[in-house]
Length: 580
Ligand code: ASP
Image (cartoon, rainbow, N blue to C red; front, top):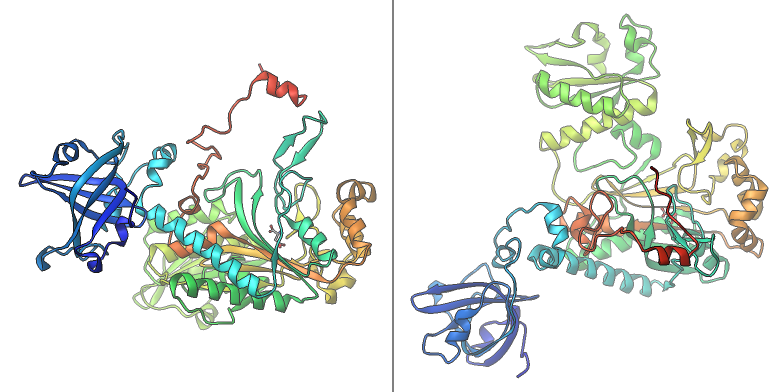
């Protein structure tokens, strides 16, 4: 007896046929002397009926939720009034003639059946879910998400293959590939005291593939970054990584737009309008207070520095930057206080406010607002002005955080998929702590050649050929044109405070590669987890990863990271120092 088809594939066309089904008991009920079993496999559930006079009744009477069974039976149509429109198998049922228990099951720690019936699964604490991930993964929602992820990856392969890309695997045990995080280290047993680093990205390898003439490369690559965990990060995560030779920034942007459009068409049947909007970094920061603006709603920041300059309101008169946001609601004091706390957590000194009520500004700093402001900024009755003043970056970023929060609170986010490019990033940013310039993307990103003359004299003004791909307010990807000349790469290292000795020691292999004739090249990497989560409408990337780590970077299922025994440590020449 072999399975004839999936439970979820049964349709009216099968009526009258004898079938063998195998799967899990989604739910068992007794009604009027009959036993009803919803039998489930990855394709869905179908109703199985066991009559009291059936030879398998006693066996069927034993089964419980999540037992694994084989059922043999005949398909019959359901009377019209019993058709279940929520299920694709809802017009049929299977009358059991035989039933065999293949495996019994413990009662699952939480129910997982509702989703398969087209209902909402009950909410369960995430830690409990992750600890019992195998049971959790049985849920319909996770089946849908992992299948969507597979479809996205299959579409990527089809599209890039047709565009002449070849996929190449690059090593996981390697040397540091810096992307601004700490490395995960793996001790070498054969060479005690030496370590591999897990790649933060395949960056240097893909560049070397370009030097080697492969022209168009891609990889669905796992990357490893030992960072302080933020809510939506994983220490190991997946990138769609690609690189192209003899191209400009335009070529890369254009190809990636078409790829995104192809994926959305193939997986969700959604058509994206091309090209995607583009904003320069400066514009994105000034208008939305973010280098990854969420364009699902408007609510732009406006610059009012000049209006307050030299005026009587001391706090704003000499500020480098004063920005205002017009909230389309009369916010209460309590709401403003909460928003102020948020702004302060992003570095603002405070959040000033005024409300337009009964035709005049009132409350907060109303009496300090120059009349000229109302000529520049359109405010309507029942709206609230929110101000931040201070150094430019902190001002825009903190008000940008307030903008996002208001978007959520006031329900301003429109459904759908909003993509855009952010371009013209600065090449470098000043690292206060280290007291030197550091790269904004990575040390291999090419300066905009129009700004090359400023590289040593005014590094902060140099733009990069770097671009980010933003999807519903999250950074879905980023890339750049690379430095392909050894002399420029050496100049860049020097600027970053990496001396010739250190450069040779850490990146000698790259410099060497560049001296063998490198083509102009560039590429991008997408954060695949975030991309799929956005498509699936999931808040957290953990919902689209089969076995994710929790927010502390631990894997509750396996208990990783875990201690290892002394012998294993000794073999790699290590001992763990335990502080008293
Ligand atoms: N390696 C870069 C990253 O991981 C992406 C790129 O520049 O292609 O962000």
